[in-house]
Structures are given as C-alpha cells and as structure tokens.
Length: 250
Ligand code: PGA
Image 1 (cartoon, protein in one colour):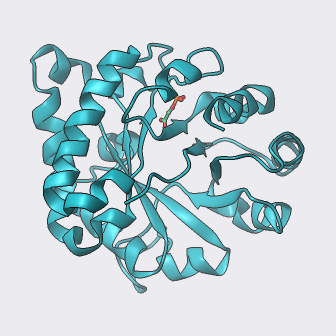
Image 2 (cartoon, protein in one colour):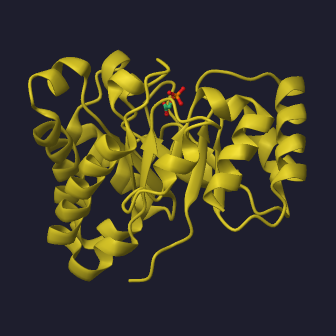
C-alpha cells in the first residue's frame, strides 16, 4: 500500500475557551491553507460544534480525544461514535496514556474503543508507550507490543485503517523528547508487528510520534523512516509553533 501523507494531530487536552479557540483556529486556517499533509485538531467535546463550524470547507479535520466503546445507553459522561459523527469528527484518540493512567483504561478497553470508532467510520489514533520505569527495566518493546496486540486482536480485519501513536510516557509534557533514533527504533518494532498482522497493508498505516514534539525538533523526528506524523499536545495550542510543525511535515 502506498504511503499516506503525513498526519499532524493536535491534542488540546483539557484546554481551550470559546474566544481562545476561535483565535487559534483562525490562525491555523490562515497559516495552513493548502498544506501537503493531513492536519487534525482533537478538541474537548464541548467545542465540537464551534470548531466544526470554523473548519467547514477547510482541509483541517476535527478530532476527539476519546470515544465510548458503547453505542448508547447508561454510560454517564461518555460520548458515542454516532454523536461524534454528527459533529463531523474524523479522528478519535484512544488509549492516551493520561486515560490509561487516570481513568484505568485497560488494553482491552482501548481495543473496544478502537472498534467502536472503526465501525462508525472514525479513524482511531491508538496510543501506545512505555513509562520511564518500564524503559529503564528494558521493557519498552514488550509494553508497546502488548498494547498494540490487544488492538490488533480485536480489529485484525481492519487494522490497516487505524493510526498508531507512539508516545513514551516520560516524554509527554516533560520537554524530554525521545531522540529521533530512539523513537525510530520503537516505530520499526510497531511497523513489524503491523506487518505481521496486515502484511502489505502495514506500510500504509501511519505511526505518529508524540511526546514534547515541538517546532524545533519536529523536522528531525519526521525525517525518520517510520515516523509518519506527530501527535502534539502543548505545542498545538500555539499557532506559530503548530504551524511550524505542520510545515516540517508538508
Ligand atoms: P506533549 O503531549 O506534546 O505536550 O508532550 C503529547 C500528547 O500527550 O499527546
């Protein structure tokens, strides 16, 4: 399968306000018109309608930060894939380390969320990554393979439709980025695992890097053979920084 364009996804996390969102999105629309890469903004659910309307007619896609594994019913606080679809959501982050850590999401729960997204035509951005303790114990490969294996197990038939994000937990929001070679080594492991599950389709699966990616380090990370884009937290809230990352990918 041919390589897709790179994907740069902003993860706003629990940040934003109506006024600030409008300023940020307008600056991105102006700076990223006709870019040669895919761009998604994963915004807090209360802002779906606002950002959907700002993005209408543009190349920038709307994304969510989570999705329910269930279609509807007694799941207080959750949002279903069908609800996301009504607001034009194209991507949903699943299994972000903050959700695994603070909301107890297991590998199985993450796999079920990816399945719910896929069943509704939403592309899941499946996050995997080791903690510092796991890296120091030499368990990086084992951890990320276990996390991805759960998703492959449930979604094997359409695994080529997912996006994977390798986000070492120790690099998220810490300013400590994985060295490009260090990130590439893990991406190659994930690519091989996808290849085993999806043979020729694996080459087309985008594997993003996330964890303190910024305007200064993006180009070198994005130049690695198996780094097909970025999942950007802090730097996605600043238009000039996010636009520079987009430019590095385009
Ligand atoms: P960061 O976050 O870019 O602020 O490190 C990345 C993420 O958590 O997706």
